[in-house]
Image (cartoon, rainbow, N blue to C red):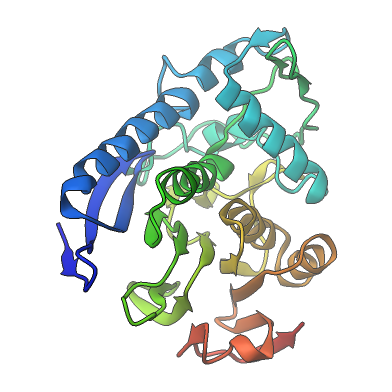
Length: 331
């Protein structure tokens, strides 16, 4: 456990947890005796999230909902909240964010947690039938109805939602003034990282050399998310597959973007826009971002190994540090 002593009797306490098939890094400025309770709160919350939303658990609420497709099904308040968010972002992104991709993920070979599917060869062709997110939600009766014959994967939104909810609990309810939570690349920070007001320094993964950083994000508060086609890949008779499904084709995206990092005020939106840009590609993805959202900046890496920046000119060198950028698109 990391423990950096502060002048006001608090210290930066740190722990790494495992949930949702990823590492969860938590750093909080608090008194040492307070941290075990704060850590336990995170553990219980992440266990709840996994039990509700994991598609790999037979006893999860999501699995039950998928098995009940075509008929109204009682859902929890947490599931209702996430489905309302999913429906909203489906509309905002013009259908590019679409959770009804589970069958396509399975057909592409992603039918188990990622560490178990490396180089699994397939005999089933990829399903190319797109699906409309025609979800029927009843917020008063707490029911949801998926279209018959469909299955939903909420992995594209749940991690960032879980981070946002945990940050809100720490910051607003428990009055933790400074902290950092990172769930597999979906992260939020608030306050400063030191008593002298230094920002949090967050490494930007090099898409072509995954064990190295290609630059740094310096944030005093805000959120970051990264999506990549290169990290979760596996072989099949159809070629290399990855987990970013294009809902228009129900196949892994073939756009010119291999990795995208987005920063802004809301971690859920950061995660959504990284996926939208990776799926639509550079030109259409940035066009959709600029039309439908504000307050977000991004670094985009393309198949040609070129780097594009969209954001404020003032952020370069201050927020985005030491990133080799060839193309600049200023707000």
